[in-house]
Length: 260
Ligand code: PEP
Ligand code: MN
Image (cartoon, rainbow, N blue to C red; front, side, top):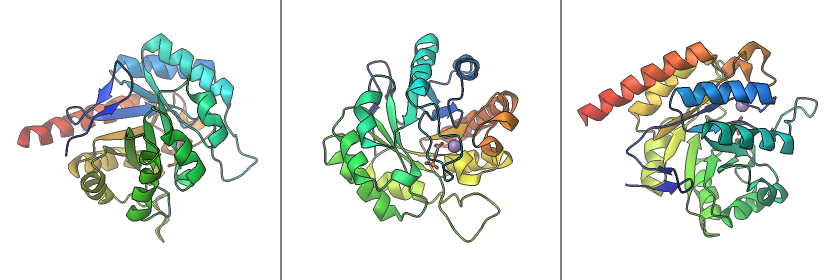
């Protein structure tokens, strides 16, 4: 099935190109984002991620910089010519965030926040819809239908792992959802090996496996100093490791494409 997701007048996502989205879990400072933006654009990455509103399990954990984080994202986007994806948690923030970001991220914990789904569905901006950590594929599909039924078909699905009894990894990366959701919806499906495994050493094998099952892209957490990250440092790659993993990923992708 072919798809076309228009990010803006400059960038449209199609199956001709593997999408790599990278960036920190959370926007922490101007300096941090400037370092990451410069690094990623130098590697040919087109879309940067970074949370300004963070859905944290513990209310005492860092909650994100909010609108200040969105302003930092916009500055980085303009400086380095990147597109920006960031999570919005509250339907009341959808309009406010519109001018700062290029893709709304709906996080795992909000996959069934129907008011939020409807609100982003009323806009024309693309939506990255993550799978709920306890959701079936049918529930995930229905969540995407909430967005589409409001008129927005610019949807990218993101498999980020589900909760199972296995606790060696943070989540269990259900890669079979990729071919299933691709054929069921026709939307691009990308994989998040950072949240999918919770362990930086598993990002490379998980990314390779994602390519093998036909994923249209990956989203990886990257931080200049993962050990100092305010969130998700254990599943974030530093610059050297990201560069190495990216080279491997591109190699595997090219190899599989040639066989096709
Ligand atoms: C994130 O992408 O940083 C995030 C919070 O992801 P998820 O919603 O998949 O947990
Ligand atoms: Mn994260």
